[in-house]
Length: 321
Image 1: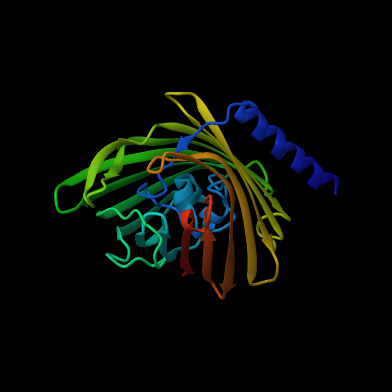
Image 2: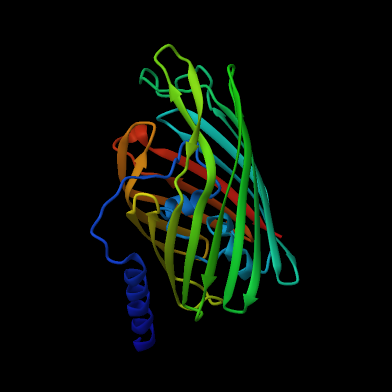
């Protein structure tokens, strides 16, 4: 018990030191509607607080450095749907090809107006843009030491509609340090490059634009109980992300609870994430479920929103090979 208390205190102190205990509550544009969408439903259910997590294989794109701490290869499929814009995305990929101390991951995603002209809400005014996009995700990680790794990830995509086509490339660099089997810490330099934005007009037209996705630094910490390698009962996650140009900051906290051998419940909170399309600041709870059977993992997540119609739903599965 004393040992676990020590880890709890270390987790809190390290996270507080990294975040600087800043009182600023910022509006951070993380572009969940047409962003990179490179993480799955588990990461979404845990409020995107898992950049330091090395306990499972399903979320390696949250921080490419985590690839080095996985010993198995997995394939995954995930889908993503926003009620607000009626945008739908489908992704597939393979993670964790290993060659000595190097690890690789690759993914492919297609995004579009999910239900075309059909309004799934039956009378609710859905702001539905005209957009299509194909994206390629590549990640690489190198294990510098048994407790330390560095990774890079890159995203290249083309987006188009009836009027214009645009191409972009962006990427991130991350490191992970795991001093014990209970603790891990991370640092990422994110969003180097440009992304995709759009403006939707009242006449039904959609203008695709180049969007500065705003470089940022992210600090993260994870605490596992009991130790990794044994049956995990609880995982606690926290991260702080600071936009470099404007020096604003927001926080994310989450917990993953093992209810049974096969069922997991996830709960998170994110503070101040900005929806750049709606011009609103989003804060609130995220939640989801995970179900594991013989290496096959099913996940479902719901992102925060002011009401039911602003929420984002995501589900997917991964298979350990």
